[in-house]
Length: 291
Image (cartoon, rainbow, N blue to C red; front, side, top):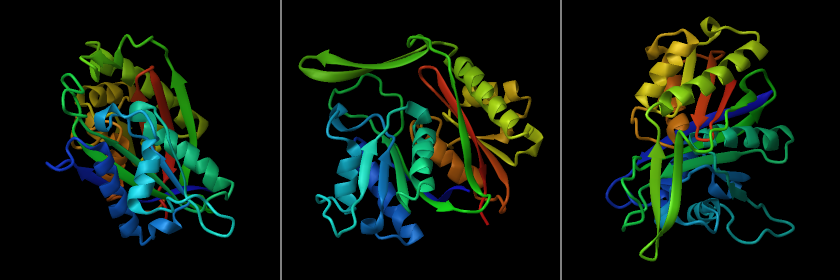
C-alpha cells in the first residue's frame, strides 16, 4: 500500500512569470490537474513546498493563494459541501519529499482521496534579492492511493546540523525592503552528498535492497557537483543518478527529476528518491512504479 504519483507537470518562467512563484505554481497545478482529468473542486488536499516567492511574501500561505487561483474550493467549508485543505511546508530541496511523506499519511488514513503537491521559486525582483541563484521553475505532482504493493515506501531522514555553515539564505531590511542574501561554502555539494548517501544507504538497508536492485535513482538538488559526489559515495556511475535538467532548479528539482527519470520505466520498477537540503537534512524513500 502506498501513495501513487499520477503525473508531474513542470513549468518554466517566461517574461510574465519569471518574478512570480505564484504564477509558476498556478500554471503547473492547472496543467497537472488537466492531465489527470481532475476538476480543481474535486481536489482534497494541496501542499505547497516552494520557498522563494513574490516580494518575499511571508503570509498568507502561498498554498491558500494557489488554491484560490485554480478554483479549488476557496470559499469557507460548509457542512454538506466538498472542501480543499491547503498549507505550506518549508524544507528547501527536501520540500517535495517532505510533502510526499505528509500526503502519504493523509491518503493512508483515507482522510483524503486526492492530493496535489506544488513547488516553485522565482527571483522576487525589484531589489528584493542579491544575486538570486535559482531559475524560475514550478512543478505540480498529483497523488492518490493504491492498496497494492506499488507507490511510496517509508521515508528515512538524516540530520547533520551545521548552523548554516554550508548553506543559508537570510532576509533583512535594506532601504525599507526585505532583501534576500545567500551564502554557501565551497564544499556544500560534498556535505549534502554525504548526508544524502547516508539516508540512501539506510533506506536500502531497511528495504533489504542494494543499489543494483534499483532501476533509477532520482535526486535533488540538481547541482552537478552534488550529483557526482552522491554517485561516488554510493559507488555508482554519475549517469545513474537522475537530476533535473536545469541545475538551478530549486524546490521543484525532485519533482522535475522524477518526471525525467521515471518516464521510460515499466510497472514494478524500483526508484530511489534522494534529497538533501540546508540544515543539513537529507531523506530517501523507495518508490515502486505502479501498473
